[in-house]
Image 1 (cartoon, rainbow over the protein chains, first blue to last red):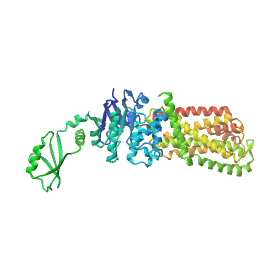
Image 2: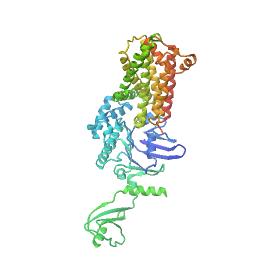
Image 3: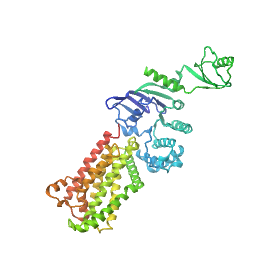
Image 4: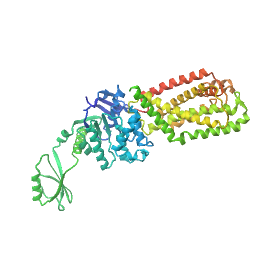
Length: 305
Length: 257
């Protein structure tokens, strides 16, 4: 049984704005699923419908087989939501916020206190448990919302841009935490604009644009469709002019950096021979990030065409 | 959602409301005490001493029940409208809306918060009044019953206001332009039996007349209206407003898009 399934999901705001145009998606239990798309693509509307904050115009969302439309209480009891915007009472303390949230799901207060301690510790917020939550930093607020979403032990966790505006160190620690809870059995659906994040964490991916699913596949499968890759070379000596490198698609980025695009699977030994012959010394080399970004832009471009 | 889970959710909302009332006690509990002390001093002591008797009682004794009920009504209404609208404005109402908590539990939780603040403030005003007059309670059950029903009724009214409110102005318009005038014209400071025929009949359309008189009957044993009728009207209004609140929640008015 899928953790989340949408069936011909449509949403029209007012009479004109068609945010979702018949979305069919299925996320298997235990998956780590990326839901990507540009701003205004319909991702937040889809998440809003799953969380019952937005009513679908037609169609349905099923969470572990239970309809959000006809069995709302049973369906949302399985769902934990980390929204894009901060939506907790900024005057309340983190500990209080977590205990109250558990209470709305019927978790007894004693157990709620134990879980609040556990999640605040896991997300490095225990020291801040008694401060007004408005005084927390952006990264702490995001972690607080993750802790809050976990308080009723949901089987499905949806995170809408959970690392937006968070520094790289905290972002990476959040990745580790999300991987852990996924490994422990929680199905995770993630939206993000950091495509490196999706590539790093997710096993399946769906891309939505203009209210339609334009791609829905495995991350490996999608990345496998890339037929070219780009390498970035850090040079030993300054390169003021690019020599003729026949048959190679090379680009001088600056005096010490060269980018070369090659067909996927090209043997690199030959490439180094050619560079040596041209008098170009290489100190280091890396694969240009971000592979998913290239595909994302390409897919959106195809859709627009 | 089974009963035990619903009860936990209800308790959670009530605890959250109590914490809110106590956290901002300077806004919730102190102002009514100061305002009512001034009413007792100015209307009860200074002006009242020249008025003589009203409804068979000294003027101070007459206005005490009305002022207590006025505090209960305003604070029950004010608590629900500000707390629920605040949760909408700060978007933390979503914590409840995404949870399996049934609508009736959400409503009951906020109404309980309103009733508790109304009763707390009513108790404070009662204590303040004891510095100005001696009170003996004529009908304790009528007194408590009328406080409870009035607090429930105006908490529900506050909830409707909060659901429709889109900005902070919207939560002060009704209290300023409707609730306060109705309270002042609801027999807090005078007996409606003093009014000429048409104005007396018109006053009987004011629901606050029934709450104030039911409470005054509970304290002093005097009322301008029939007590069973007053209780009947309060109960009917609670049923109608309660059903309307549940209808608004079911439709998601102002809450779900």
